[in-house]
Image 1 (cartoon, one colour):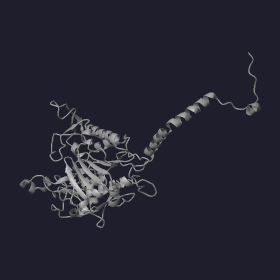
Image 2 (cartoon, rainbow, N blue to C red; image 1 turned 90 degrees about the vertical axis):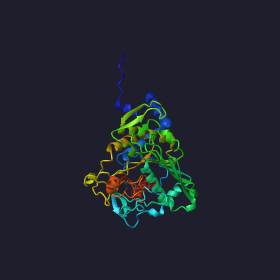
Image 3 (tube, one colour; image 1 turned 180 degrees about the horizontal axis):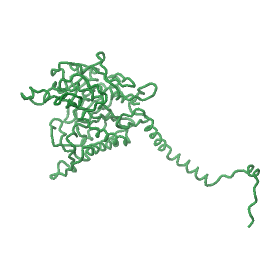
Image 4 (cartoon, rainbow, N blue to C red; image 1 turned 120 degrees about the horizontal axis):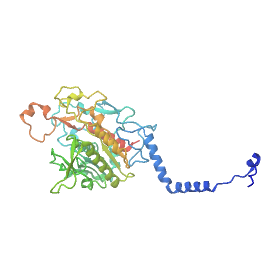
Length: 428
């Protein structure tokens, strides 16, 4: 066999390069894939960048920044840099606070009207939340009502979410004539209607979000609480068509280290009940909620919020007070910026972070826990309508019946709605 003829370097340089058919096939395949799946690939890569570059990531969850959230008006800061609105301090403000007077809002339940029930001071009304890196926009009731024109806003959860619902109604109702607004309750659903705007602000009682034996909106003080697995649609059928949804659930899960879960129906003669750790049971509820949201909400037209746990102040030893005390007679704030009460389980925050971090639907997390933890002064304490007559022993010891869970209105929960307003219109 003849060896191949040597080719000179000069002739090699002058020779016209051949285009490999294998390379041509590879490039053609890449071009075809790019055309067919280009939009999906762009979406995947853009979401990855959003996760990596989003500076406004409230702890403990990862809040994904989506291309365009419904109701968004612009950026919170003109320079485009994010601001953690949940990191800040309380500032005394006797000029712009309170945002309304207790006596001017007829929709506050008597369980929250502290002035009417004898609270001697108003100091809890004069605090404004000041983030470290920016200013919160002023709550604009006109803007909010216009955004709600022809729409439904719903708060779903327990009595703490009902307090936030009432706060929102109070922030808006003064702009609506008396004959153009109304409030009505239908079992678990309470509806405030702004007739001129064809808008409703609603509250739906579902303390676990899932079906439970505590679902009666009036009679629900049950110590042996049971939650039914996979039952989100029992309540969720009443939530369909809502444009702005605000969920909460925490307090009712705090019955101990375990939670009873019903596998089946409450109508079954023999009920199959298992016990899960509180964290696993809560995780189950969060996953059910997200599945419902994914199936029933449109991320381009609607918004979903989740309010973190509302702290209680039932143990004064948590902040260095005397043993046996609580929020009763507390009129000052907790000044320790790292304070975290024993009643707020960090393990639950971790569950929220884990589940929400995997969400394929944009959930806005209202992280009100830390900023509310400083407000031992803002609870209703003994200044509220009592569910039953007080005994002589209770009257002799106010600490024994002080409510250190719920909040006076006006007060702290108005700040929660200022944060909701901020995240609704200026989410970036």
